[in-house]
Length: 138
Image (cartoon, rainbow, N blue to C red; front, top):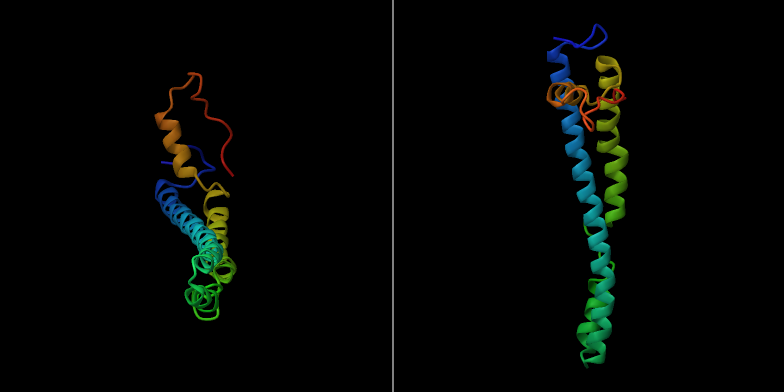
């Protein structure tokens, strides 16, 4: 049952909550993609140190092979990790984020976490410090 006439029904709140949860999962995936990007770049720069160490250790052939075959190698055909991020951000991520915003604007007045707001109302101790309701999310 809605908490007020301006709130959607429970079934709609649940559905929008599931959509927002899915977007939050995509946000986590996006964070992992950025971590992948940073770790791959860090490894590529660490290879330069390995090349220098191999040269100093008297292994110029291995150093040259790593320098020419591995340093700067595309992670996928014709792509470095920054290109993957840009394509992901501009495509799938943007579409998912925009759709979620459109649905929440239409069905819950832009309140993305209305489901959690209801849980907070149920679980808090009214009048207790640290349990204040606060402003509704937007």
